[in-house]
Image (cartoon, rainbow, N blue to C red; front, side):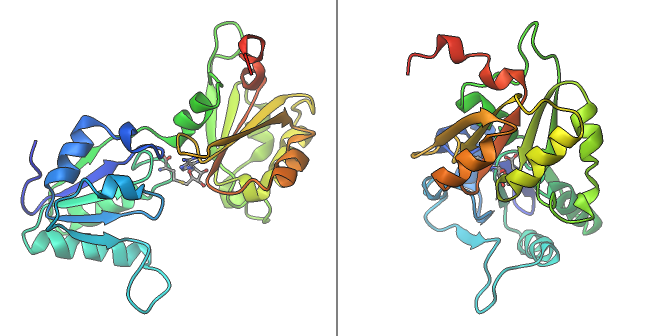
Length: 249
Ligand code: SAH
């Protein structure tokens, strides 16, 4: 399907591996007049854009550190108003901690048609790529996805860690690797066992993907020793160790 003139497409790029974009997303990317991409989007994916497409890094603007969300919204609307088909390429899924909803609202307010193309979120691909089934029959029947961004600050971005800990099911934390110690501490404080298995998956589905396995009590030190850094997904719960028995490595 060719991208239509004057339309903004919010496209999920998938978690990292360029093969994990959807067919629909790829078609939009290959045909769009303009591509506005996130920092985390693979350079290999951008090679699929038309040679004459206008490519903008949403995170960068000449002479300035970064664009604000409002500036990104304005850029998208401006490009569509010029009559271009616009592929807004976002890491993972556009609506999982991606501020995609704000971009839809801004486009609608400007009277620009928007199409949202779902993507594979790192919230799912991270655990899966690290051999962790977020649900597993007889072990866990639900999972919670939460941001770890502000886990050290008083506000905690509105995250009630006590409630997260107390809710049954696996816990998947995005944007949390820098606050790993604070997060595991709060989960233990909230009633999770210090022995609960945890995996941290760095650069999931990308070359050089690394996985650290430990428990709520040990994982922070292990991750620190390994020098683990963003982007990484943390997954906690019995599911984090459920495939251990069948591991061959
Ligand atoms: N919309 C994105 C998430 C954006 S928030 C999605 O659905 O995946 C950015 C966070 O996503 C990072 O801090 C990290 O926690 C996670 N992330 C994105 N790509 C990742 C990758 N390849 N490996 C591990 N974590 C990743």
